Length: 338
Ligand SMILES: Nc1nc2c(ncn2[C@@H]2O[C@H](COP(=O)(O)OP(=O)(O)OP(=O)(O)O)[C@@H](O)[C@H]2O)c(=O)[nH]1
Image (cartoon, rainbow, N blue to C red; front, side, top):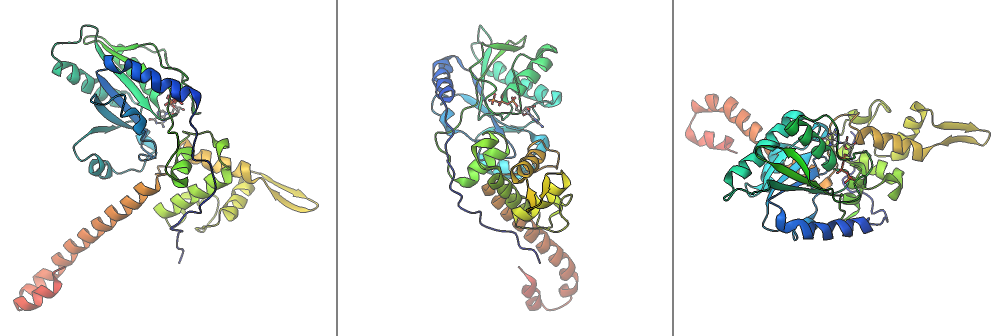
């Protein structure tokens, strides 16, 4: 029977990607803070823990905040896990930033904030959108504006790479009556992340550029988390028929499939980098289905799942056994109590 790896190798990689424009964005955020009524903090729901950024907490302390888990359409995170983490203390919503219905609901939440404000803000509700690079902030602004004002043109530049937004935007109107205005900010990274797994997870959601880390290592991490979520190997069956813990075995099959194998007189050469980037991109763009990249979240789901299965089994056994044992002495009934 196939047993997935439980521990990921301690690869020696840099845990930092803090840049000049990140510092600039944080300084600007601190200057803007007094005029802000509400914060929308965007996290990628495929890496809900890794894309948290505590750097925003201090300058925006005390502001009403909603955490948005973006790319909901690509994520396998269960809502129960998010409920457990937020524990009714912080509001959160799962969204697809390109989805009109989700944006309508979000505008409604901001309108409710406006209704609660006394006195009413004379220049409208001011909302700031924060988050790590590439989590979907600019897409969110564009869709909010399209839905709120019925406009078709994008105002914020978006892209599949981190760092598309380099400076905090001028204020953008997304709704009239009440007036709602937003600031789009550049994604800000942490000075240093917690561990190798966090860095890998951030590479998989596109928060850091793929060239920052050896793509073979990132592909190995991807294989590691895929196996933990599904040990049957079905998540990469289109390349290889059986589950594997060996990234080189998988890359060989991928290279074969996408024609990245060169046969020379010295033998066969596999394009490991090209095959790794292909494998990573398939998952990053959501072409292979829904997934979760954060190891800590996967471990917690494991426990939730275990408890759920256990509860279900208790119910099933009690249901099946009770009618029979009821006819017997009470003492034997106790034997089946779990
Ligand atoms: N599937 C899916 N893709 C999304 C979603 N939100 C954004 N994207 C895509 O994710 C990529 C990054 O989106 P951006 O809006 O540019 O991200 P950003 O946070 O503004 O990025 P920075 O400028 O680096 O800070 C783009 O290719 C978007 O089309 C979503 O909810 N679902």
